[in-house]
Length: 210
Image (cartoon, rainbow, N blue to C red):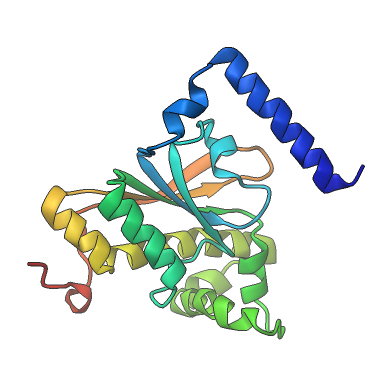
């Protein structure tokens, strides 16, 4: 049996188990979803949103990319954000990075990775802003972990800079934005920042919302 065929078998077993304990489980999710959370996480296969938070299908709307970035030119991310905030009316946005992130570590080097260089440039910019603090940390892995935290904080700020979030803040004072970091070595999550409608961002990023 090929590995992908095993996935189908596991899917069948999972679906049967769900119906065994809750016969209406899939019917409830068939026509509507009402998640409270939008999760912006890393593509790393070791950090699946539902599993690490102990939540069920339908609880979290998910977007993942390398190093959990919020880039103002990323139409994929912005489309997810707009749908989550304006249509699904999520109450909370979580940006979740993780210690030991390969994307963050790659951005700390001068290696040429080809196309991904353009993506990692966003992390390099965060490194440049915080260079003095980071380079005071001698150990490479410890420095990378601090950059993971700073990167999460930067992405939360980037969300606050969008007109999508600012419009929701003005109309409904939601969502709150949480910056989390996941420990791959023990499975625990720490919060490193919180941003909400009371936050003070540079005026140049504020939009006139009618």
